[in-house]
Image 1: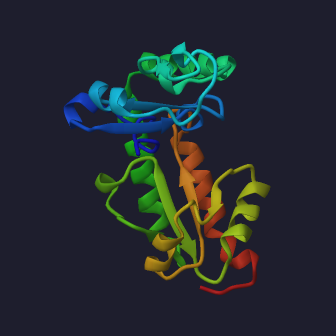
Image 2: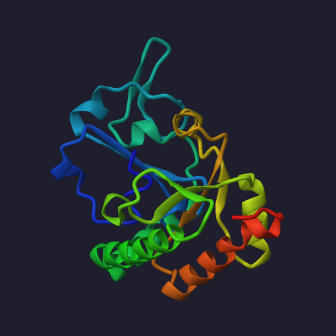
Amino acid sequence: DACQSVPHMPVDFHALDVDFAVFSGHKMLGPTGIGALYGRKELLEALPPFLTGGSMVEIVTMDKTTFAMPPARFEAGTQPVAQAVGMGVAADYLMNIGMDRVEEHEAALTARALEGMAKIPGVRVLGPTDAGDRLGIVSFDVDGVHPHDVGQVLDSKGIAIRVGHHCAQPVHAHFGVHASSRASFGPYNTAEEVDVFLEVLSGVRSFFGLKD
């Protein structure tokens, strides 16, 4: 699952020697409803199709069907052309910036956020607190405040984060929380925006009448 790595750093699937890899369009500044599957040629050729329809067959008779070679085999019917074009443009945009530069920029923002969050009473970062062990994403818990409420306070100041289970309820059970808040940084974010996030976050508990 490369959804949280491909948009943030250089990734070489050949060097990683993986059989399969997937990533989504919307997490790399592209449209929703589309993603990409990378697979070894011989493995893709051995897999049966999971959908049937136009353009994924070669010969169809009353007795048998011969499927097209990948990737056409897995692209039945009308494709999401607009989304595909949008995802391609998003990929070009990131590549033109340079993924090394994207990684360096987001690493600096992540380190700035972690340093600031460590100074805010009642805020606990979930997972590694060393900036070298994470990139672009910081999940956290605010003691005594539900993540939905944390998100509302930040939203009222123009700061968008994600709150909830993040498709990972067992991980939340591991950390002993029902849900969490998650701040994400991209190439479009600035150090000044991180500082605003930290300033607003530092006032969340007092907003709800909680004392440090």
